[in-house]
Structures are given as C-alpha cells and as structure tokens.
Image (cartoon, rainbow, N blue to C red):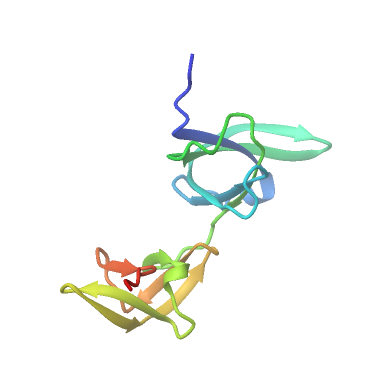
Length: 147
C-alpha cells in the first residue's frame, strides 16, 4: 500500500535536560544526508512521555510533522533536527529578502517600495522583522529583469 509522501513525520530523540523547552507547535528545521545544504521545516506535533534509556542517557521521542510537497523525503531517512526554542514578536520573512542594509522590498499599491526594518532572531532561513512590514504584505524576494 502506497503511503502519502506529501505529509511526513520525523521521530527525534530529545535529551531529558532539553525536554522542558520543547512545546507543541514549535518550529523545527532539519536536514537529511540525501540533500546536503537543503533545510526542511516542520512543527512539533507530539511529545511522547515514555523515556528511552541508552548508555545511561535518558531521551524522549518528539514527533515532528513535516510537509513534503516535493516528495523529497522518504521513510527511514536519517534527519538532524534543530528545535527553535526562542521566539520573538514580529513578522517572519525570508532571510534572502533582506538586504545588507536591513531593507526589504515590499509591493504596495502595485509598486515596489523599499523599507528599512528592525530585525530580530533568525534561524538561517527566516528572520523576524520587528518593524517596517505588516502581516499580509507582499515581500519581494527576487525580481525578474526583462531585457
């Protein structure tokens, strides 16, 4: 029977010392050996309460729901995960949309507008814009130049 590969789950063992910082719904980024340099995202959907003990180290299994629309991930792949435990108020924007001068290009009334933003924490993929952009606004990541 074929599985739905567009919705995957990652099982991760989290050390008991770190478990208190893990919450349902937290953003998780992870990599797999099959796609070096590519990062995938998911969210914590379950924290299992039965511990595993291996070589006197206690861990708990955390389940991460990971959308897989391109079907790049397969059952049995090994993942290295990072659970983002810090959070900050603001709008999450793609880090590649931000210039070195901390400006974003925003589509406003059909025109491109450059805005300076105050930034917060980032995870290497996305960054928090604490000011300068509002929820729902269209951010230009790259543009096509017609010749």
